[in-house]
Length: 254
Image 1 (cartoon, rainbow, N blue to C red):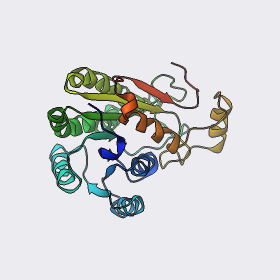
Image 2: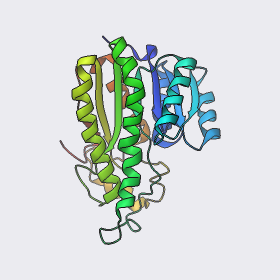
Image 3: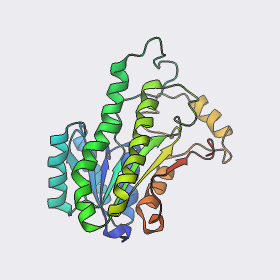
C-alpha cells in the first residue's frame, strides 16, 4: 500500500526551526497535513504553522518524555487525523564549533547520554505511539535524520556522532521489525548545513572548505535535505527500507 504525499499526516519532531522547519515546509508544499512538534519555541512553531497554512498545526512535547509524546500523538490524531508519517529530526541542544568541542579528555558520559536521550530514546518514544496505527492501516513511513559524521568524522564531535550512530542502528532494526507491517524506516544523513542554529557558530572558512571538497562545490542547505526526506515518504520509495541516504553534495561516498 502507498499513499501520495497529499494524503499523509506527517509529524516532524523538532519541526519549528532550521532543518525541521524546511522539512515541514516541504511537506506543506506537497499538500500534506503537518504536525510541527516543538519543545520550547511556541511562537516560532505557531508562526511557521500559519505560514504553511490551515493543514499545519503546532504541538508541544518534549520527546524525551514518553507520556508527553503519547499525549501529543493523541492531540495530532484528533486535530489532523491518524499519523501516517514520522520525521524524527529533533536534536538536543548543540553547537558545531570545532574549537570548543569536547575532546576525549574532557568528555563525560553524561554528554553522550544527553544526546542519545533525544536522538535514540526520543525516536523510540515516537515509534511506540505511532506505529501501531500505521500497522493497522498497512501503511507507514518513518524517516530519521542522521549525520555524515558517522561515516566521516572529519571533526570528532564524539557525543553527537555517537548518538547519531545509535539512531542509525535503531533505524535499521526498526525497519527489520516493521517492514512486514507495511512500514518503511529510513534515514537521511546530511553534512554541515548552511545555515541552522546548530551551525551558526561554524566559521565561514569551514563552509568554504567543505564546499571545495564536494563534487558539487557547494554546501548542502536544509531545503536540499528536506527534499530527500520527501522521497522516502513518497510512493517512489515504496520498496526502500533500512537505508541511510547521505545528502552532502558528494563529500562522503557510500
